[in-house]
Structures are given as C-alpha cells and as structure tokens.
Image 1: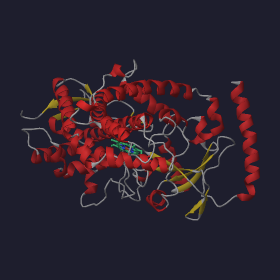
Image 2: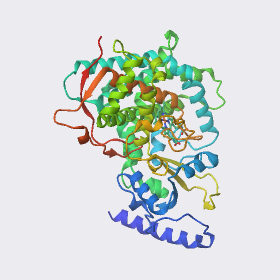
Image 3: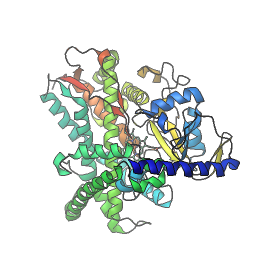
Image 4: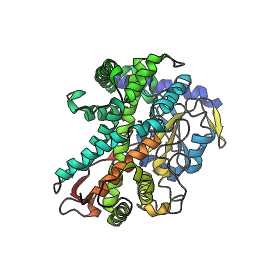
Length: 492
Ligand code: HEM
C-alpha cells in the first residue's frame, strides 16, 4: 500500500512539473469536463465507459477532450468526427495506442490487432487479406461451416422442449467453426488448459480489456501494481504451448493433406521463403491468437444480441421466419447460397449490429501533431471513436433505442465501412479485415436458428422480461446468458 501511495505522489509531482513546463505551448483544445490531478478523467469512466462517454458527449458535444492519466484523449461521437479520423485523416491515426496486454498476448506486437502502424503491420495485413481471408479461401471453408452448424442444430433438436443456454451453444458453435477453419479440427476444452479452451480465451480478452495503470502511466507498466502483467505472462505461456503443439502437428502431416486449413497455408508461406519480411513460427502464432480472439466472441455475441431482440419483438421474429419459409421452405435447412436472397434477414442483422455494438469503442493514436476542425492534436494522443453513441444518435437514427429492422427499407446504408453512421467493423486502414467472413457466419448462424426452431422463452417469462444488460469488454456481450426453449419446426 505504501508503495502505491509513494508512487502516486511521485507521479503527481512529475505531472505538475510537466504541466508547468508546457503551459506556454498550449494550443486550442476542444471543450471537456474538468479533470482532477493525476487521474485526469479516469474516475469518470465506470463499468460501461461507452455509456459514460455518450453522456459526456451530450454535455460537451460530439468532439471533446479528456485526459486518461497522462494520455491526452479525444472522443469522437458523431458521424462527421468519425469520418474525419477514420477517412480524412486516417493516414495520421492508423496506429494503435500503447497497450500493456499486447506485449504478452501478441509476442511483442507481432500480431495485426495491436501492431504499431508501419512496414511490419502493412506486410502482415497484406498477408492476412491476400492469402488467408480471400474470397476463395472463405468459400473453400463453406462445407466446414455447414458441418458445424448441422451439429449444433442436431444437438438443439435433442434438447427439444428443455431450457437451453443459447449463449453457450452459440459460443461453442462459433469456436468450433473458427477452429475448424484455422486448425482443421475442433479442440476440446481440456486441450488448452484445465480452465478450458473458451475459459482461457475469455480470460485473455478480459485481461486485455481491464484498465491497466501501465496504459495510462506508461512508466508504471514495469511495476505491475495490479498484478495484470503476471497473469498475462502466465496466460501467454499456456497459449504458446498450445500453438507450438498445433504447428508441430501440422508440420508432421503437411505432405499428406488434401485440403488446407489456415495453419497449413501459413506454413506453406513460411517454407516458401518468398515473403519480403521475416515470417517465422512466432509470426504464425501471433496471427493465430489474433484470429482466435477476434473471430470467436465477435460473431457469437452479434448472434446472441440479435436473437435477444427477436425474442423481445415476436412480430419481427415471425416476419423473418416467413421470409425463410418463402425462400427456403420447411423441407430443408438454410444453405449459404440462400443468404443473399434473404433481404429481411440482412435488415435484421444490420439493426442488431446497430443497436448492440459488439465493439462499442475503437481506439487509434495520432502519429504526428495535426489540426482537426481547428483543434490541435498532439502526436501520441489517443482517439476514441464511440460507435455505440453514433449508432444511437437521435440526429441520425429516428427512435434510436428501438429495434426496427424496417428502418433499412429503401436505405443504402451498409455495414462494410463506407457509411459512418453504422460501423460495426469500423472503417479505414485498421478496419476489420474479415468483414465478408464475419457477415456470412453471423447471417448463417442466425438464419439457421430461426428457421429450424421456434425459440420460446422459459416458462413464465414474457418478451418484456428479457434483459439487455451489457458486460463491457473488448467485445461487449450480454451480461446474463440467453436461455430459450427450442422447438424444432422443419418437416424433415
Ligand atoms: C461479427 C464479427 C466481427 C466484428 C463485428 C468485428 C469487428 C472488428 C472491429 C470493430 C475491429 C477494429 C477496427 C478498428 O480499430 O478500426 C476489428 C479488427 C480486426 N478484426 Fe474483426 N470483427 C469480426 C470478425 C472477425 C473475424 C472472423 C476475424 C478473423 C478471422 C477478425 C479479425 C480481425 C483483425 C485481425 C482485426 C485487426 C485489424 C488491424 O488492426 O489491422 N474479425 N474487427
């Protein structure tokens, strides 16, 4: 305890001197709330920072300034400001802010998600988009996805009539689809650690999202006052052992394989020696962690939020089932090739992603001093885009708190990064490189669930009783698991 107080006093003195020396250099900053010494505005952010920032934007406008510890931070909460940072000045804000967790979860920033902008990130991004997540590659995994979805539907069919934890089922399906595409097989819980495959991934996401003093007071990183670094180091050893085993298995069976998963593809690239940058086992492991962490929770969470809204709005559920009956019929399950004919499904998915941002806030860092809208932004400042606030902005969306898929009738608004009022995958250089895959998986899981089953609420529960409480994290999921009673409705 004494160490913490002594450290805070030293930080306070250093900060006061820093402010004093910088006073003559002050430029015009946007308005913002009054901060307090040392913490700045950290104390204003609670368990749901996207809500706190949305409330501050109502008072201080769509572009305001706060200080998180020592880090000057600008919050963008409108379509216009998001467009400025993610399009007009994207070249200046294309790097990620310092993140202590990244050091340990990404082999020293060798992955894509946390890598600093520069030649290494550009090379890796090129490799991921041109070799791993191409249209052709994604299509080649169609049978893998169908197989895993069929297994889940059968398992739900067997549970028919009982209360089922749909959040857990969808999370397992998303993990199984992702593992089958990346590793060529599913992994049982105990394969990774006694805490379980999903448990370990969730712990990684949780630790990466926990506010770390080292992120806001960089010189405190080494002291690890919260013990987060110790836990991250331990977790990274578990991941490393698991990924080494997977790479070894793939190396041994390389010559006998007919269909290639993503690990095979990366090993081919590594052995070809044709990359313009060093690409070895460590780079492969870093990308694998990216894919596991970025793919599983995002897709599953989107599906759970949308099913929750469908259950809260039975007339929308009925309308979606009617479209599925007309396009697919009740004699068979949905195929991926049906998806593009399902217009109402498309609207339901968009509206689910609008109302429930699975990644509510994205973060960038200024790579040089610049002026945006007349306001000076210093190199090293952090930019937070509050997608949650933008996607619920009443100036853009009439009745923004309501789930109304019909708002997209006759609208050209899309979710692929062109329309700044709806950016579930963000936009610009650092936007999600897996948009087509993400959309396909979410649409397929949702369509299949709604088509194959009448999903009923547990006895005694009404649609209005269903909560939409959030648990904030890198991926913001439903606080309480979604429980349903599935009743099979197809004729076969
Ligand atoms: C519904 C599904 C998904 C959603 C909503 C989603 C959303 C996002 C968002 C908001 C970002 C941050 C962009 C930014 O900071 O501007 C991101 C980045 C990323 N996503 Fe996704 N994602 C999804 C699925 C996936 C999948 C399936 C993969 C991989 C197989 C993936 C891989 C990545 C990677 C590697 C990045 C980092 C890109 C970079 O920094 O260059 N995502 N995603």
